[in-house]
Length: 435
Image (cartoon, rainbow, N blue to C red; front, side, top):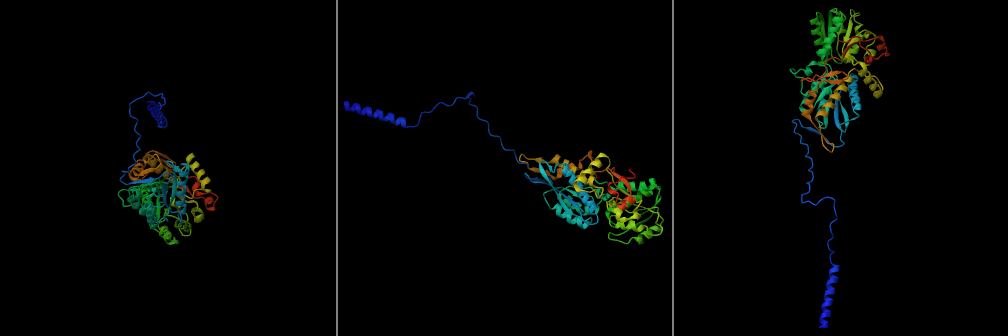
């Protein structure tokens, strides 16, 4: 019995040792301030839905850190490079004033040389509109380029705005040169041709005028408006002549003009033909006292010097931006590029870019990670809807045909001997008349 008792004691002791070596007993949970509840925990927040582009013309997607791409179609080489480069520079000042970025993305601005002819406009337009990253286009310099590039812009669903195209057909919905998505901050030549005719007839008192064009949409459009308004006012068109781009000898056409005994010759053509035409006028008998008048295509810093003394007293219609706004833009231009603007349309480019910026900001969708979507159709509609925009060139409102300017930023200038000598720059001079 004693042995049995001892054996039982050993078994009990062994069981106690094994229990001590097992898993520890559970401890009490730590105390919390919150009362116990049987309510379920809150479900995690769902990730935001990805943006779905439903725009009929598609969307431009700009990923985090990627640039918002603006392109230009401008004549930045050749005879009219002064016009195209000033347009590009005016746009660059607008970009600088924006801090170089839009919607948190850097702004990319590059483009193609369009050479101020239809072939150049076709080539540049084809390349720019084939780039799906391009959001908006500053272009073109010349109306002939727009005639070729316009259909391409429309087909791509893009928007293009010109700061220097002025031909009336480009915003005439009844004309084949009108295309959806084309806009301009430049004045329509329905304004410019009218003020030129009114100045010649009402201010200078002339009743007989001859006209010359070079076959371009720009020049032909202007001379048609001038002739119609001049005749409407009571004047007589003594002759309407044509020259060719590339001509250098204008004495035959000037001799023909002299036979009609005009008091003024209106020749809204480009450089270099316009420079030679003006300089040769004094070499033709009967034209010694006849006044010359051109338009904004000759309003460049180099025109007077190359046209020479025969251009002294000549008149030019061209853009004018005065007051503090004009002075501030000129100051920025000089500080940025180290020279005066070579033509008069820089402020129009500045306004075009700022209209683009405002329209993009109004329609773009920005994801949480910074990705930007710009719907092309909505952007086009937003530009058409621009109204009461306070620009350097006036209060701009884009109509259904693409005209955004009212023609208020126009004036007439006169060439002086100081401009021919180079001591005064035509493009920063004060006008002699404003309508």
